[in-house]
Image (cartoon, rainbow over all chains, first blue to last red; front, side, top):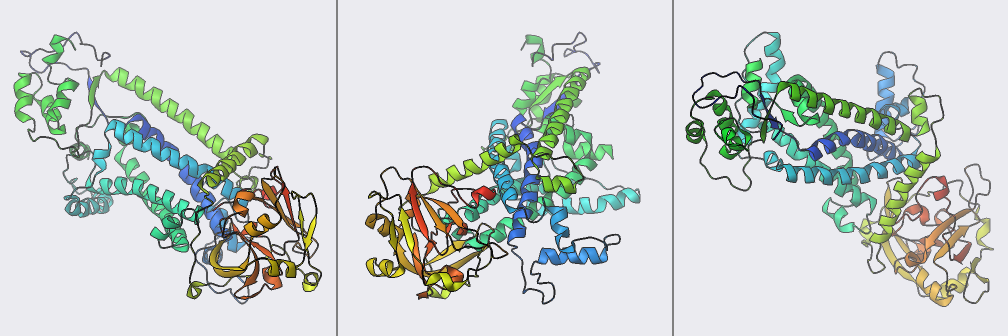
Length: 278
Length: 321
């Protein structure tokens, strides 16, 4: 802390209301946590895009082949529906591929998708270790632990988020629920479950990648086929997390975003700082 | 820390020691007062447990320095983001890039190298995970599921079965051995197993197989001492339009010796049908389905890893599961 050298107008115990040119900053995120957080963006994107390309080769959700088209893939049905009902898409050349053309690397590229998936998967595992190391070194893991009070605080936070846009529109006061921890109850629930989901994605991934050597792991998830279903729905959990996560960070403002890039926050007490701003 | 800093209630050390965000804020409000009293009286005295949340480490800096450090880190972040975007774009398959409007061919030796490296690492991991003693799970007859005819191309015409022979090469004896199906079934004991066959595509089937152990064949006709690999071929395979498309696959001898690696002659208690690779197919449950060659016509033992049909089409080589 040598850089915060004693300023010339440093107050002593007898001065009143001194001029203070200094800003108090709080270190919110350890360097390794920030690195792994941002690396997750391309890695998870790569995993999801290549994952849906792999899904194409043998969809989990199938039905009896359609008598006219021979299609059995529910994802292809959704693509056909979208092409038929969304304005401007009626001329889409391959409706059954719509989902795969827009949510994956593309159909019919299993070998390429597998190679990318392994590259991203090993990166994801290493990145997860970096994240855990950052949590331990920075002590941030304690802020993620769930509390008993979260059960009653979560609905309050949910109600606050739900009502916030309406309160803004109608210019009503909408006080932020009080909390004096790093995260509020809902944040804690989200930031706690995402690493758990990451762990489960990795374990279900190994279960379906090595179902013979790790047959006990597949058995934990209910067998090989069930582990594939787990692996598939865990992907949706990330998507369901990322959308509100990005919206809320942008709504919260620069300080939150900066703290994940730079590490610092200038907000002393989150709930009051939020309340004062609004 | 110098002596005069110690008297300042806003010093980071003291804030940390008070153990709560609340006291940090109060300390700021009571700034200038007798600091030790102000902080001391407001700090929470409850002893902290191992799992209790700690206050965030705090530090003071001039707004100028905060701006400088913020600008520096944000610029670094931006540079990293641009690099990551470029790198990710570089790794995307050409088909995906074309769909995104990239006309230029972005395939390069570097991209191939990196993706193949990932594939190789994954194969090495699979090889480490393999154990010759670890059996794969077996199932009850009630758990059997349908197994489709998954011939990559057209199903061969059954005509080949009557004149079928298995040729063995690369043996210690230096001879080329030719065996017909009667030689094989009469000479070796039959083993039955109900195991899962897993396709690289993701689907799987629990099926009931019978046949001789590959290991028994290896004992009866020992491969030459330097051999580490078997090249397993079928000359009868066809491509989608029905033209000859011989199938060839590499199998490490460690896997060939696994007690559940069969040269299957029976499916569901009946001799194999043409759909399932009559009269002899490889059944190697510790590998992906694509290693389970149907209608084997030749096995060659070699020292170096032989060519592999699907590895040449971008899939992995070892394929251990």
